[in-house]
Length: 150
Length: 150
DNA sequence: AGGATTTACTTCAGTGGCTGAACTGTTTTC
DNA sequence: GAAAACAGTTCAGCCACTGAAGTAAATCCT
Image 1 (cartoon, rainbow over the protein chains, first blue to last red):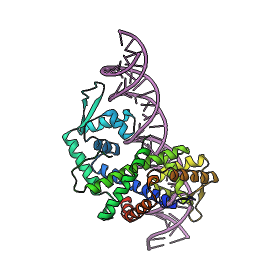
Image 2: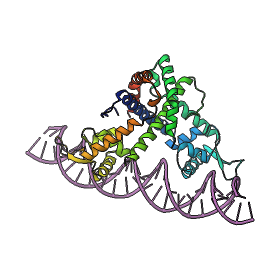
Image 3: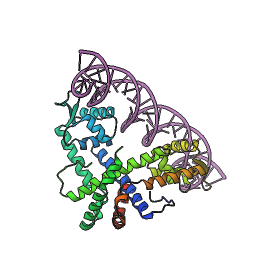
Image 4: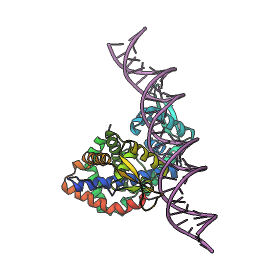
């Protein structure tokens, strides 16, 4: 992504976007690698991470930004592996909540630990740089979040 | 991605990684949206962007991190649409180079313009914050790059 | 020089993530 | 209490992508 050239009035902004794209791609690769390391696919890993607390399937679908039918498939596979189970939602008998089994919790912890442990990028920054980066990212958060929604 | 909690000795680093994941997901969505806006799929858009200068197909495959056979398919589609053509590599008659047609160039420019123009994140930062962010990202670049390679 | 190996792309069959439509059962609405 | 909206499931099908087998050209090795 470092080889993009285009006539554009804001070279600094462009360079930032390019860097962020590079970061995005690196993190994506890191996530995928970590997931396969622990024996999960990317959507399985995303789902597992989201299930810190029991969630209704529709809520998971909204979080993953995919169709509910896809969540059915993901939940099927994770349930077959014994990482979660379906539980009827006490407040709505149409809905089901996904909740992690003990093995699922363990796997989730392992996954997250590896994810943060070997994360690229932050390891070269010193304490001051890191808090600077953090505050900049916090500032930018609102827009990023606003842009994420469909 | 804001709802991850795990017992981890480095909460600041964790928060940075979480933010970067959020940024990564936002940018990915932004890229996908922009690509479909101009009538391209994600891999088509990536390929088009990479073709600022004519590239051999193997080189494109390496850049996209996919199998050469997939590049054949992508090139087929883009050639059918008239955005690029195959040209025999003058230095190796086994190889073919992909090069953009005029329409392909135009589309690439439009794509990149939209990509930077509507990029999330940077728009809320002022000039000082932006150069800070840029220098931090430059510092972190080496590691990110190192982690990207297989 | 020339036969064996490697390399660049293509073709094709198959996998896996994901969507959209049709269906069941439950809740809400008026 | 019937009609509409909703949660999840099933199924057919799309698209990105891989891996193996095939063709043609370059390189390697005496």
